[in-house]
Length: 361
Ligand SMILES: Cc1ncc(COP(=O)(O)O)c(C=O)c1O
Image (cartoon, rainbow, N blue to C red; front, side, top):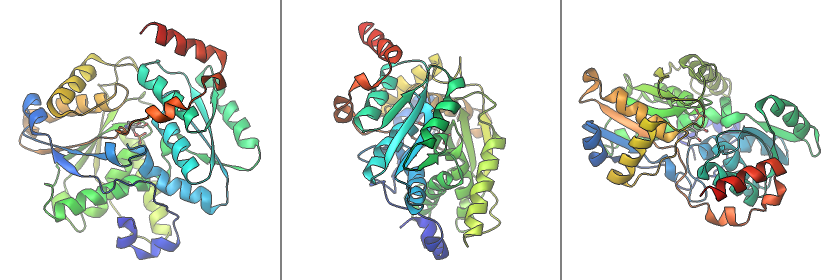
């Protein structure tokens, strides 16, 4: 059962949840070699890349709450939106199918990389219906159309970042608190995560605020979101607003009330040319993480998040503090899913782009 239900048993009958992750609670490990290379003495990682052996990363935690609600409402179909390589869209495809729901994914353009292509093919391999639109501007209409069909669909918020999805990362924060309480990990001073749709950062902030009631060492812990999308989409304000929505959901369902979320800082200087555009500093720190610890990062989220950590943690005032990187990228192999994909299901313009990518090696 979720730690949230253990803490507040009343929630069990009032908020739907189903288990999808088979790797939680995820371990917290010390990154001594990477820390040494980055000049950060106390660097740790929460291995959310291993939340699931089917498809790990941050999305499965959110979907445990979202898909449970879709099922509770008797829906047989879900619709969601993301970019071509969206981890959220792919996780929705995989876990919706696992619980007997059909998934329609409305996908928008982004810089095409081998990682993006692999995710797109895995979407198809997972049996999702992919509606690939040519521009962001046409996504709302395509989404509205997808929602209109029969049977009635359940809309899953982009990134899984609504009040329910945010509970997934409240749970992750409670896991961190359990590890601290058990002496298995030190209390972090800073918890770092990529900030896209902001549900991950919001859940961590709310959960750390809740956990601090029982684990005082967490009272001063700060969530550092590294923005990977334009400022209009991700900010400390947006994180705070989502955290409050999730707090209201908990309170109305008879859970804990009056939680003060942990402090949140959002770093804006690691985005580079835009969402999905790799940065040099991201590439460099990802290469260092691979060489030092065998950690695999991608360029859109996790490399930028680690680049943000490296810069923020290196400030003299933060030396000697404890820094925790939440590794939100799936580590499970998607080869089998991608092999099942029939690219003919994609529109010709996108197939041509994929072929051009293959031809360019
Ligand atoms: C690998 C990865 N890390 C981090 C994030 C950011 O999470 P959020 O959208 O909750 O801000 C995402 C979101 O798509 C992601 O795919």
